[in-house]
Figure 1 (cartoon, rainbow, N blue to C red):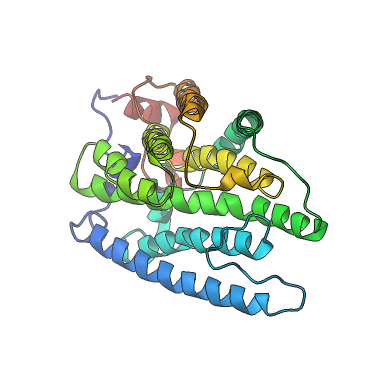
Figure 2 (cartoon, rainbow, N blue to C red):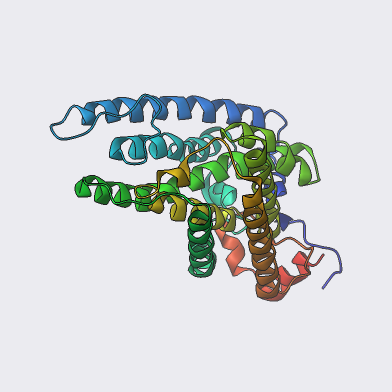
Length: 320
């Protein structure tokens, strides 16, 4: 066996380099433009559909800012308008990204598919951790809790949250982690370009004060590094979902849990360490699971056939 790493196995951000038609310099620009157009169309469809649903008897009208956590329509539309970014990005890559057939799943991971086993195993640990930490943070912050009188609305909101929050979190990870990492990876070798360049955009997408934005920026960098290390977008989605899901499930009873704006800087003493420790824990777990060095990323061919490559060859390529 040669000591040179196989060219068939690359880190997540460089997967497009495996297919000449996907690695052309203009492909990333076309993908971004098409994804934006598809997202705008889907966004309009969701809004129009939501407005039509609100005309039905007994359905509340959405608020102008879609920011009332006790309004089922606000919750549904607020999450759905973000969730549509996932199909927008995936369809753009499939239609104009030069990744059809076996390589179509390379946006998910180096395995060419969404690694459900990896995601579910991580979620079984990460979600309870964030539930405890976020719950304690809300209690210690002094946020008021009460049960709304409209029990039906609360049940509807909780159901919407369980279904839509993972989709919303996945959308943000595909847009702010997967897309820029693989776009920049066509032109540039270092993963840091695709990790750091979208951070300001991710921060601007939130309406916190400076302390809240620092927290968001740390989270964005951590998730980008985690995607690079683990060879896919699954674990960033899990961590993002664990955080948002626990907060949104509390929002009908404590609206402040999802309110943006001013942030007590002391809360960063909880939020930043949990982000860093969770990232490091998953990082170490994947290193042991894959049998690779701590600073070595998981590599792959970006297509499902890679699963049939002998394990020794894969491991050797990873360490190359």
